[in-house]
Length: 466
Ligand SMILES: Cc1cc2nc3c(=O)[nH]c(=O)nc-3n(C[C@H](O)[C@H](O)[C@H](O)COP(=O)(O)OP(=O)(O)OC[C@H]3O[C@@H](n4cnc5c(N)ncnc54)[C@H](O)[C@@H]3O)c2cc1C
Ligand SMILES: NC(=O)c1ccc[n+]([C@@H]2O[C@H](COP(=O)([O-])OP(=O)(O)OC[C@H]3O[C@@H](n4cnc5c(N)ncnc54)[C@H](OP(=O)(O)O)[C@@H]3O)[C@@H](O)[C@H]2O)c1
Image (cartoon, rainbow, N blue to C red):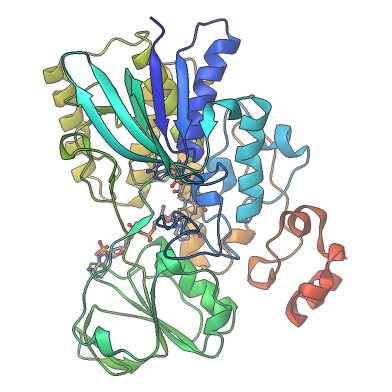
């Protein structure tokens, strides 16, 4: 009987799984019967952004945490597909840190050319899963959100690719209940224009805090204060930007910090991360993890230890993104089809433990990048995913982190070389700080397209670059 594969979620990870099977088919292999379920009306996951917050039109939790003016926060050369380059998709060189719409276009382009959309049922949410150990079958209940109709599907293999940056982690702070200003989690942030002239407090010290804080600075916030729990980010911040220790409590608009200082704020953004949450899975199949580079219980970061018919993609914290999801999807495909034979449960556990020990000993961010490069290397070596120079990408990550250290507002103006094609990125026509139009057209075609939407600074800079 043909193997039946169910894929939950058509974000970059689910799209990678579809592409992995398509690639095998093109190479002459018989591929399983595939069904993919996506609760939104299009694929792209986080990149398919929305103005909505809270619940969507069907009353489902809004998935995306992305926002207007979101530009790639890492060099695009670090996430490039090795089987579908930026050159192939766009036919022109451009800068290293494109805005969301450009990367969305890129990931869609690859799968649109692969004719895999036919496998995806959109507006269809996974509701419930059960597993029968006797028959080794999953029964997945899904709901068509447009009709409210539920259906059951039976699969031999199940791929969970629903992401882990959609359910906010929201801590409690004494007195926050009566904070009178704007109060939101980063998941519900859609643009920093509202913070112009405001004194803003960001709780958290990772990518969301940094990027939303600098968005607010770009859009004219009066001041930005970061509050950290474990360690400050330590960048050379622009004027009116400071880092404080953790908030102990609020009194009206005043936040008190652990170091005894205090400040008055108009708005608070909780950049406190996300929960791994899989409400459609029973607890014994559901990954419980923090946002770490190697979640436990997944062999090679992909195969569920106690049930090797279950696969997770993209469950780790991410230096690499799109190309890592590819490496995982190719690996998962070959395990599913039996091309890769799994070792015993004990050997798998020993392998997981080795990675976890190595993770625990990582001294710094540079070592973290190398760690994830080594992880990809193992996956790619095991499959026919086109290899690329992982050491070179590790170096790109280190260069990028160095650029952030020296200029937190300017690192996106730096350019990097593709390890897939050798193409050097070109300097963007507008510095990130002055770029006020994040559309694909403006990005690719230049400032002359729609200068009317730019600020005075943008227009001035754009005119001076002509
Ligand atoms: C604010 C933010 C900014 C980011 N910026 C960058 C960046 O600049 N560069 C970068 O490389 N990465 C960035 N990332 C990382 C991002 O997570 C990855 O690029 C990528 O989107 C992860 O892909 P995924 O498919 O694993 O998950 P997601 O993109 O989250 O996709 C999961 C999909 O599953 C669907 N789904 C969820 N639950 C169900 C269900 N029950 N039934 C059916 N479908 C379901 C969702 O609708 C979604 O389409 C960012 C993440 C966030 C949150
Ligand atoms: N393209 C972009 O520009 C962009 C922008 C935003 C986000 N992103 C992406 O989005 C993903 C998620 O990033 P993220 O920053 O939201 O999550 P994250 O990296 O998981 O960081 C969570 C942060 O919340 C803090 N935190 C958690 N609980 C807390 C508490 N109770 N009190 C105080 N602080 C607490 C953590 O502090 P500790 O250090 O103490 O744990 C950490 O600083 C990343 O992949 C990132 O790359 C990208």
